[in-house]
Image 1 (cartoon, rainbow, N blue to C red):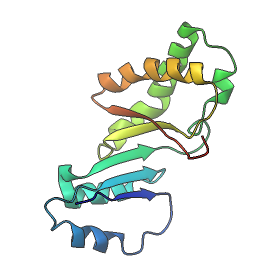
Image 2 (image 1 turned 45 degrees about the vertical axis):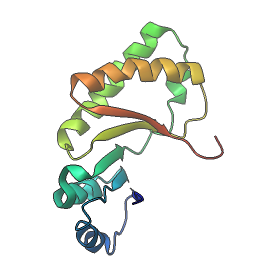
Image 3 (image 1 turned 90 degrees about the vertical axis):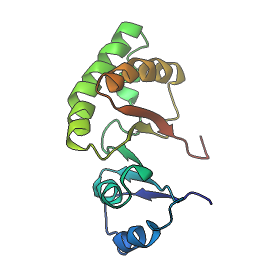
Length: 145
C-alpha cells in the first residue's frame, strides 16, 4: 500500500476530520502530516491515528525559510553554535513543550544559500533537539533547488 502525505498551511481544512476518520480503519495506512504554522492538523491526526502517524512541524516568519542575516555574518564555528543555541532556546524549545504532537521539527525550508554555514548550523543545532528528546528535520527541498 502506498503512503500519503498531507501538507497544511493556515486556513480551512474542510473534510479533513472526515478523511482521517474514514482512513483510520486501514491498519496499514500510516499517514505523514506536515504542518506549517498551524499545528492543529497534527494534533487531530494524532488523536485519531496515535503513533501510526508521523507529524512534521515548521514555524513561519523570519528565518524559517533561511537565516541569511546570521549566515552572512560569517562561518566561525563558535558563532554558528551561539546562533543555534539562541535559536533553539528562544524558538524551538518552547514549541517542543507546547506541541508534543509534532514528531519532527523542520528547521528551515527550501533555503538555497550559504551551504557551508547550513552544514555547520544543522550540526550545531541537532544536539539541542536531542537533549529535549525531540527530532530535527533538515529541510524540504524545492525542485528548483
